[in-house]
Image 1: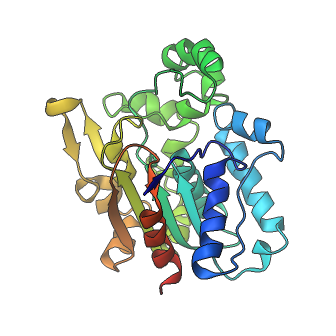
Image 2: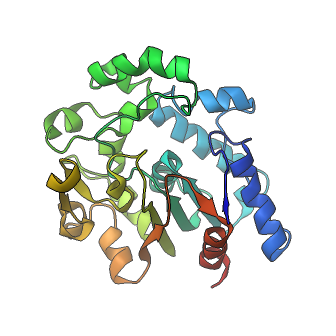
Length: 277
């Protein structure tokens, strides 16, 4: 049965339910809900406002200092929606403590080509509406790239010049610029498994195929989709994805339903991935 949960901040019911589900399913399990601030309201705000370079570094510091995780030889990590590419950035940039298994749900690994419209289901409809026009009209300005989170993983495949020149986050963690960061690739290759879920009926993330690193130009029936394995990022192995794939450690899975509709059955699959050997 699908469980309606919120995953907007570390203290939300959806995030907390993961630990509860683990404890009920496999017994006492230590879980740490990543946060940028102990205040849930401030942590929630950081999902929209912030510099992702600074936020990832904050997570790196927190995990390296966390009393239990810092002593672990390896940890399992789940990234929900944009948290998936942020968790991947953690693996690439620091990975201490090291991630063994990384699972992402509906994440924007290849960016988004459109921003989510403001509606009554938005994190904060009034705040969203106030910043929406700036987000869309000034995407590549330093002001927006250093302050508004969604802009930092915006990627228009038909405007790569602006993206490669101005992107504060995604162009770097996807190793798309001429100068490649070898550490990113080497850290990704250390994963035992990297499992990417795409929601079958996702209309929140545009395009939904970004969950698989696929590149999409256009929309609807006219859309041209280039699968990950046909892209240079895979062929030249900028991130170690080809290495993971050829060794059976990269998986593409489908989660039925809309964005972040996660069932108990799906969570059991994730537990099998992480603890089933």
